Image 1 (cartoon, helix red, strand yellow):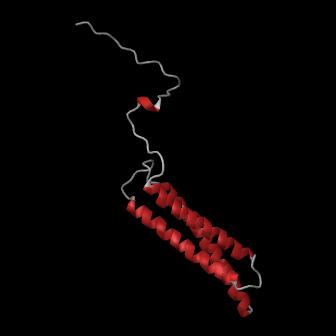
Image 2: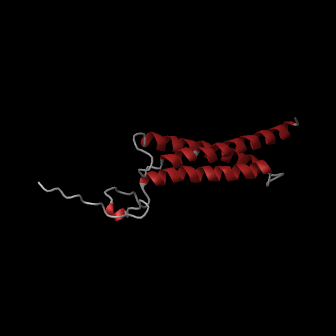
Image 3: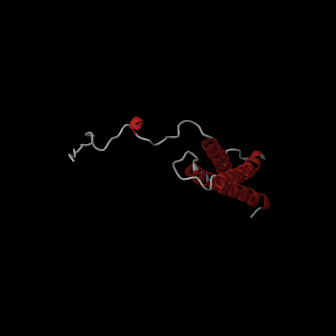
Length: 131
């Protein structure tokens, strides 16, 4: 028997074009990405409203209390959306297009929005009671 050694094709620094691999890529907007991004968007809105309520852009009006309550409610809604998304994508792996990492990150702006809304509500009620 005559064996021939076949050399693999020469590659530059380990780069293999995607067209030559057998792996599949997730492209575009998936339902998982959409669900995760809604949680982030609600969290960022909650954070912005909570910040405005805490800083007191609406001094002397009743809308600061409304903004603080709205920041709290939106923060809790965002956390519920993230928990639901994480429970739906329990078996998915990171990098599969399910956006588990985005849903985990969504907790940050939601929690900050809740904290700012709570602080704004507390300072408004403390001023109302004179303490």
